[in-house]
Image 1 (cartoon, rainbow, N blue to C red):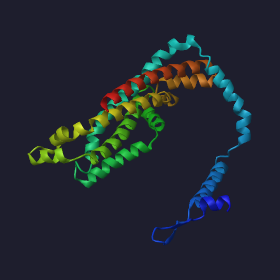
Image 2: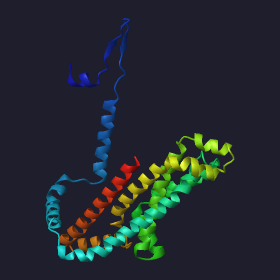
Image 3: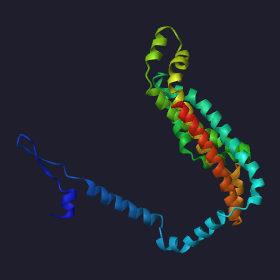
Image 4: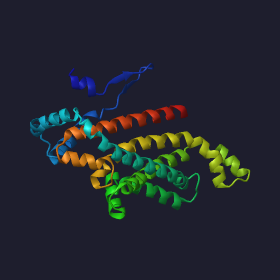
Length: 273
């Protein structure tokens, strides 16, 4: 028996009553063939060249070697853009998460029983989430001008759509017992939501908001590429000048900042669990 037969050929099994049953024929070979075909097409479309990667790979080593020898004299110039990045991330995340909850209430079909409103809010979440943060930051710079305000708006839009989607799905799967009991006692829909649903979803809401803030600190660091302020301006400038020692300083400061934020966020999520 060949290796192919051992892996893919359907096997026969005998039941305790003496009947023979045959295992369904595996579709794994077909899936493997399709995967290989798609991979080959992708390599052709992207003009993948292993020779180019090997020949240019030494440039990566040169860049990394320079980055691992940061220019510490440049650190004072990094502090202010780093705080700009943190401010963009915090305010954008905070306002986005704050407005996402009432929007999630409108999107949840077990809270607002008006299909048109549910559909419109869910469509809004989908449309905003479809636009990459970098693109929304670029659009914001044309509206609000260059600076951190454009970055804050871009982060707000992402946070609003991301947290809103997760929360309306959480609301739709929550136990409605307490909410329905309050409605039967004469509470309004909004009061029943605040007292019967909010306590159930609050751990998920806070945990999601903290996780979103962590990610936004990293995202905000590249928004400067489109003029939205923060560390991205310095990164873009120093990469353009091939000053990789200064780029290493910027990335190191960002790494330490993100690590501290993640530790605080992890501690808070642990307390909520």
